[in-house]
Image 1: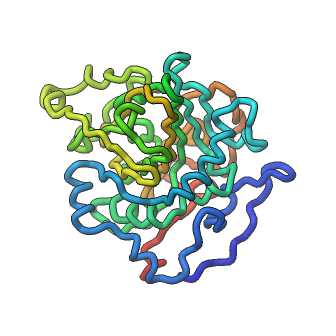
Image 2 (image 1 turned 180 degrees about the vertical axis):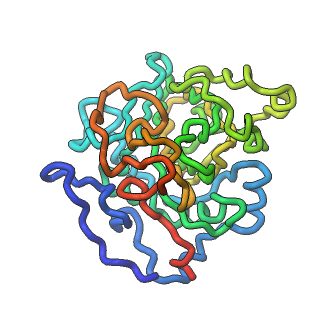
Image 3 (image 1 turned 90 degrees about the horizontal axis):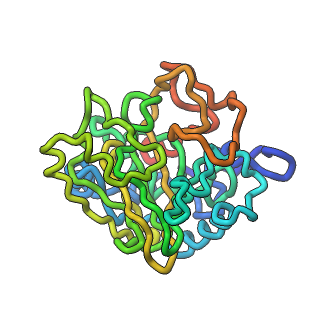
Length: 335
């Protein structure tokens, strides 16, 4: 597939572009894919795919260079400093200056920032991410077309960064069906056990309740071990966390039912990560109340988006598509 001509995004307000109106990379973060053969160079090996389906996750897949990480980190000033808000701040789906509400355990968490800057926008189209996502997102269809679901930034400050409690992602996403989703967690700083690296429970992607995910116990991620109160004895026995220990610029890919979480940051530096969530093309809305804001089911602490965005309203049974759910990869592009 030859690179299309890059169009400009429409403005959210004069002089402030809304990058969600551009459904292709701008080219600011990485050069566009130039031909069909290049797509196949980003594929995972059969061994990596098998490991993913065995464990429910795949660790330390290189996706960003040091320079690309640093470019993305330039935009973190808009979220770490309340006096440095981006002029398009109102486009965010959610903004939590501290989702834990405990000043001794700070967790800065945002959604929808792909709308704000070209770097954060281009990240979701990264070939090193979307091609493997196509291989992993649907076990019965290992070369699926992939759509973007939503993004997240997690920031744990030095010395007092908070936890993200054990959970399954799809527990928050049942407003879509069927479950053909995955998450890509990209480390923008090296992740260690001291600074609160992401951790996984192998095999937990097979843990369900009545055919669905485990229930949500904590919308603000504060009760780290709360999930253990609802686990069966065999699940408790299998609860043996594996620290991801991601290198800067490396990613983990995980199943929407894989139990994962992270402990606090007690190191001398920040622990910053960009998270990208995807679903297979063809996934449907599972509610007539679907709207783009509050994608994880929580209220923001900044009361950002009050109005229902017409482009984000998708009635039950309708395909998830439109402005906020761009197609990021189709295997036909590399055929």
